[in-house]
Image (cartoon, rainbow over all chains, first blue to last red; front, side, top):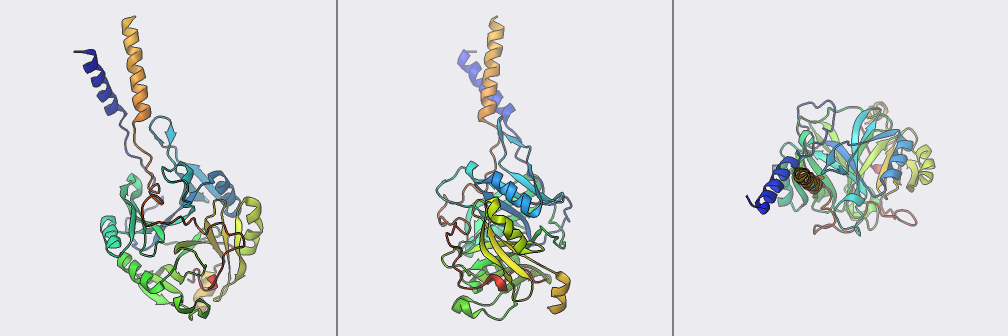
Length: 306
Length: 64
């Protein structure tokens, strides 16, 4: 056997030995139900170019804990993913966008909602037919399931996840937990139809139309599945802002939170103010520029008045 | 001595392969911004004077 042949043999043997198993992302819940709740937001990922500042920001404001995944890829690189826990419960993940192989000129800092789907291949096909954009086709994340990163027909970015072992059960969000998700859409009607194709939502108008939004307003649209409200759709209230999914965190006092935001590297985008239906709301941005809303929420009081 | 040199070469090659190969980080968000159809929007942007609201978010948020 020539030296070259020996070398090639060694190379192929090495490749075979070095081939690693696929990355195994943990499931979105420690207690999967085994059932699919299509249309439910089952996870949130934070895309940030300031991971250390983001840890401090969300840790100080909401008591979140951050746990870097111990998985390694290749020999020396660790996986670019950090789990977020609240009181020990998994609630989301964080990705350092500076480590993504992408155009650094494009700022993609934001919170991404992951909508549950029962069949991700079918959901992606439906999304494409409805005019959506597929950035990442269905990708296997082992224990977590299969994910696709997409945008709706109006350009709002989100992900779809077909969990492997089922979705987390519906629970009452506590203080510091994710409370709600709503789409700020350019066209509420069109967005409603689009998402109904993905998840068979029932749509319902909740409020009197907001006259200040002019023709764009169709009131506040709540999309539900099996009687459970899942997400909302609102005429985009920010001039020049591309349609976007907005995530809410339940807080006791938005003003108390916003008082700490600047010192932690964030910004107050909208001071705490009264909600039309009761309670208070505020809008802030984290250290990487990602927006997130704060809301008080008393399920008993709201149910009584609903 | 020759055996030792060969073994050292083998170890070197394997280390090189382990460094270069292995599974890739599943960068599911890596394609955002380089694919067509997505603009340079970055969250809410870094407004100097806050968002220019022409509607209201006080109608939004969770109800029940």
